[in-house]
Amino acid sequence: SSELTQDPLVSVALGQTVRITCQGGGLGTYYASWYQQKPGQAPVVVIYGKHNRPSGIPARFAASRSGNTASLTITGAQAEDEADYYCNSRDSTGNHLVFGTGTKVTVL
Amino acid sequence: QVQLQESGPLLVKPSGTLSLTCVVSGASIRSSNWWSWVRQPPGKGLEWIGEVYHSGSTTYNPFLRSRVTLSVDTSKNQFSLKMNSVTAADTAVYYCASWGVEWEESFDVWGRGTMVTVSS
Image 1 (cartoon, rainbow over the protein chains, first blue to last red):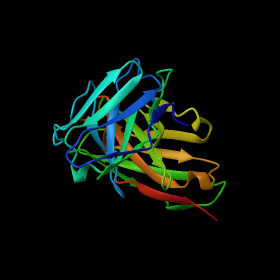
Image 2 (image 1 turned 180 degrees about the horizontal axis):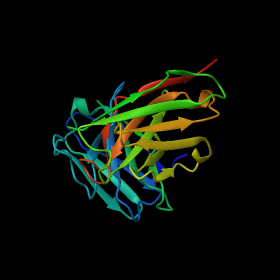
Image 3 (image 1 turned 90 degrees about the horizontal axis):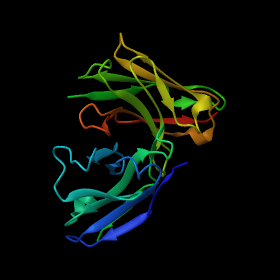
């Protein structure tokens, strides 16, 4: 069971901007990390901590938070950004980690 | 470069025990980090199973706590998962992952994952 809710499907035209949201759990208190997962591969972190990008992750990936909603924005989406995206944070008790339900991003 | 590698039986009988081990290389399991297990049923999302510290302290997903035991072997630089009373619903790719070794407050390094099937 997940306390973090994401829209299941999102599509974006090549080169346009898409925002993926994650709501609930302990997001009012804790930051979310974000993961990209392509078919048959392990997830890869694209945002960590206070909206930081690991080395090697393009600057077109950015994160923000408002209230109990976290967002991942891809500005100028590329074909290689087509993947499943998961948020991760703590549950409402703060004692356990939890993943969002996942969003499949399609680049048209 | 930190690397994680899962190993264990790929087929487990219903009502049996699923056992997996994750070997850590490129970092000491004694570092100030938590080590986690995450699973993903076919076609579904990620589910956090639990985490273990080098001291043996653990935190579990409350929905799985009654069936899961995590442990660490510092002499072998590895940590392990045991899940008992498994059913077909436990069929999934099981990943081990580190928390905050390279990038704070995130699952920053993942194993490649191992597909475990529960079937008679």
